[in-house]
Each structure stands twice: as C-alpha cells, then as structure tokens.
Image (cartoon, rainbow, N blue to C red; front, top):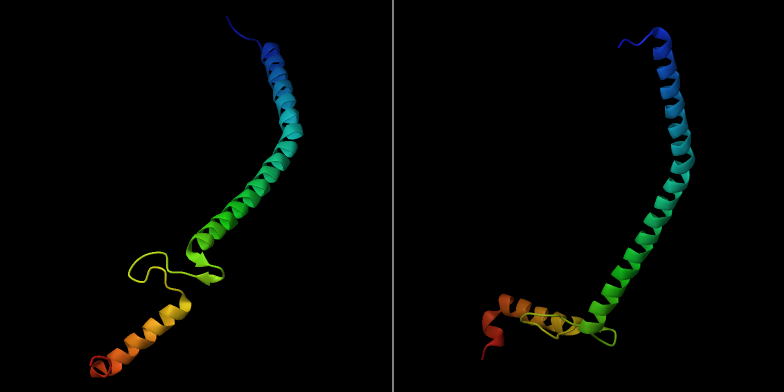
Length: 103
C-alpha cells in the first residue's frame, strides 16, 4: 500500500487543522488558568503569613508574662530581660573581680 502525493497533502492539512484547533483551545484556556494560579499563589501566601503570625503569637503567649518575654527553657528558664541583665551584670563583675563576690 503506497500513499500518493495527494494523500500526503490531505494528511498534512488534517494534521495542521488538528494542531491549530488544539493550539487555539490551549491559548484560550491558558490565560484564565494562569490568572487562577496567580490568585491561588497570592491566597496561599496570605494564609502562610497568617499562620506565621499565629505561631508567633502562640509562642509569645506561652513564654510571656504580660508584655515581658521569658526564657523558654534551660538554665535561665522563666527569667525575663531584666533578670537576664542582672545575671549578666553579676557574671561580668565576677569575671572582673572573682574574689569580690565570694565571701
């Protein structure tokens, strides 16, 4: 079975028609799809920011006493910034004059 020149031209035209049909459909549908993806991306960004803010508030609520941030764990658990400044001051004084703080 051999395919003639006319048959080949007919096949080419049909293929071009099919390609044009699908290309026009894709062009028509890609723009709304891109807009929808952009909308979803911006909405997800907003949700992520809200989640982060909620996490921060949760952590601060757990480790604060009113407006005073507290140390969440470790040797200085529960101390606030003023307490930590006093501890640092005492440790610095002890380093400068070790015998001055020990009777």
